[in-house]
Amino acid sequence: MSARNTPRGPRRAINVTVVAVLASTVVGLAYYGLRSTEPPHGQAEPHDVAPLASIMFDYKPTLLVVRDSYAIIYPDLVADRMGWSLALDGQDGTGFVRSVDMHHPERVPFIDRLDGDAASYRVDYVLIDGGRNDLGQPPEPVVAAADEYIRKVRSDWPKAKIIVMLPASATAHETANYPAVADGLRRTAESVGASVIDPVAQGWYRDIDVKPLLWEDGDGTHLNGDGESYYADKIIENLKLMGFGS
Image (cartoon, rainbow, N blue to C red):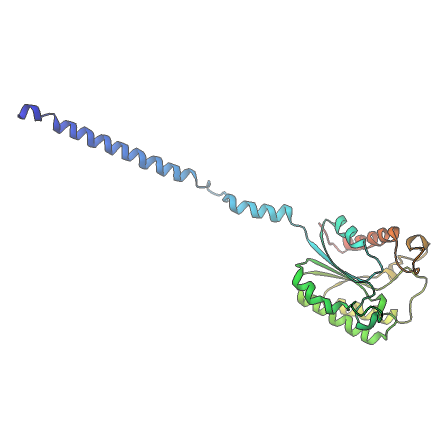
């Protein structure tokens, strides 16, 4: 009886040893597997790298252009050449004051459209290009309306770069109210840290034949395709001199 039972002790010891070795091996492999999924020291995890790379290489600044009908397609040309995305708020016959076009009452002034723009667009640049249709109005209410609008633009997009175009056109002479309106726009722009583009001071239409830039069958004031390209080139030149763009 005792002779038959003698090997049980050694066999039991061997079995216990084998189980312990297997358990140790399993634990070791599991630990190694967990360690192998951790990033090396000093290396960011992949889900942290991807958004950063996207921000660095895929982000395109957004330009909002608020315009009248003097030039229509130039915002696309400017945004494309600058490598920006484009948001556009353009309506014919509009400007800073309400009564700019009595024949088209649905065409509302810039400030009445601002809340909708602010709710719709997150922008890096705002180009305000209007006021031509206001030059037949007394300058005081035009300057006051422009001041209110530009200050609200600054409030709605506090970090955006704002560019104010003075309301020049390719005509041989200025309207009587132009100097007062231009001076008012410049003062407001400077007070909110906005930049100004002044086509008159820069002589965009001085000493050149403007007829090739205007629609022949129009009213002699609106830019045609060549005029739009010329206008866009001048704006881009100014933006780059201001240090804007990539």
